[in-house]
Amino acid sequence: MIINWIGHSCFRIIPDNGKVIVTDPFEGIGIEMKETYADILLISHGHGDHSAKGKVTGTYRLIEGPGEYQEAGISITGFDSYHDNEQGRLRGHNTIFRIRADGLTVAHLGDLGCIPAGDLLEALRGTDILLMPVGGNYTIGPAEALEVASLLEPKIIIPMHYRTEGVMLDIGRLHKFEEAVKGNYAFSSIGSDTLNIEPSELGRRTKVIALQPKTTL
Image 1: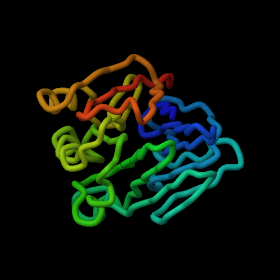
Image 2 (image 1 turned 90 degrees about the horizontal axis):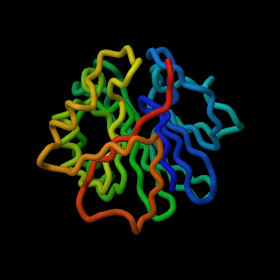
Image 3 (image 1 turned 135 degrees about the horizontal axis):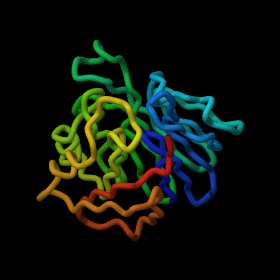
Image 4 (image 1 turned 180 degrees about the vertical axis):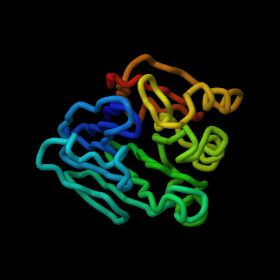
C-alpha cells in the first residue's frame, strides 16, 4: 500500500489493486493543492479545507458520511464523530473513515475534536495506520492525540492537520506533538511525502512517521 500525503488532511492512498483513494482535498489555507485523480473520494465534513471537490479529477465514487461501503475489494466504513468536545455544538459532525485493503487497516480521523469512547473506540481498535490531526484549536491537539494513540495502539501514526510552511490556519506545528510523544513512541521524519508499507513491515510497538508534503504557495 502506498500512502502519499498531499498536505493538511489530504492523502492519496493506493492499495495494491491500483485504485486511488483521496481524502479531504483542501483550499483556502494558504498553500495550493494541485488537481489530483481519484477513484474514491472521502470527505470527512463540509468545511472548505476538507471538501474541495474541484481539486479532484476522475469519475470517482464520492463517500461523505457514515456507513459501510465496498469498492473493488476495498472495505470502507464511515463512523460519525464530533468536530469539537461539545458533541458537535461548536463545529458540527465529522466522519472517521476506516479503510481495509492489502491486509492493512488505515483510519483517517478527519477533524476529530474529542476523544473517542464507547462503540466508536471499540470499532477503531485494531487500526494499523492512524492518520491523526495533532495541530489543536479546531481538532484534538498534541495531548489529546497522545491519549487517542494510547487508546487505539496503532502500529504507525502519521500526523496531519498541523501547521506546515505556508499554512495560514491557527494550528500548532509538528514539534509540539513530537514533544508530547517523547518517551512514549519512537518519532521519525522521513523527508518524503510517501510511505510504501506492507503488513510484514509493521512493528510490534507504535511509532510515529512524519511525512513531508510537496504542496507549494
